[in-house]
Length: 249
Image 1 (cartoon, rainbow, N blue to C red):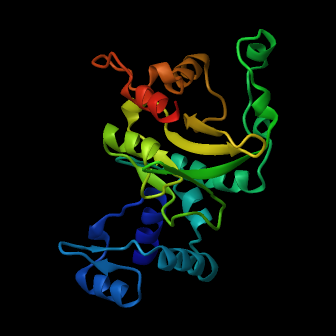
Image 2: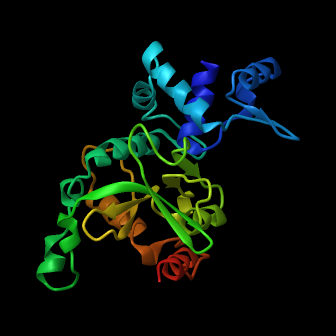
């Protein structure tokens, strides 16, 4: 149970609660290759060991990751939302076979019909990717349910700076970002067109309801509209949008 909880927290959010395991357990985790000692603490961040442990838990226990996510879909603690975590792994599976984008999302056809936007790309195949910007180099890696550039699937942002870092550099190679609530969207990730190679930043609002009433629907649309990012009584500008414009030109 200790290994499972720490393993899944590390996979889902790129971090875990150190209080979950004792000093003797830390030594065992180091001995078995899951963890390593740093000057001030012991960390579990060995990618190959984490992926191997996840596979072992999935095959040999009654608590595979898929079941864990389903059981916790309605459980929410501070900065960790069960439904959002489930969606991250759902999209990893959905994009495995590079689907046509409008088979996944419903688009408003009236924008294209009225000439307000060119949405021809919605009919193209897209793949889920991790985007890392290092100096002048842009590295784009495909993400599948069983592979990716990092064992860490999500980045749990605890400050506006961490959201900006995920968009602009993402040195830890997280496929998903779980932003702060004042930001607006609940989940961020990149997909890449198989036709043009262009990147699309997806901003998603998670609503775990069978039906969403009009008031909540309007609020949800606002949260994923770039001009509304970071909107609050005390926020008059959009630093996130400015950073995205600078980053993507």
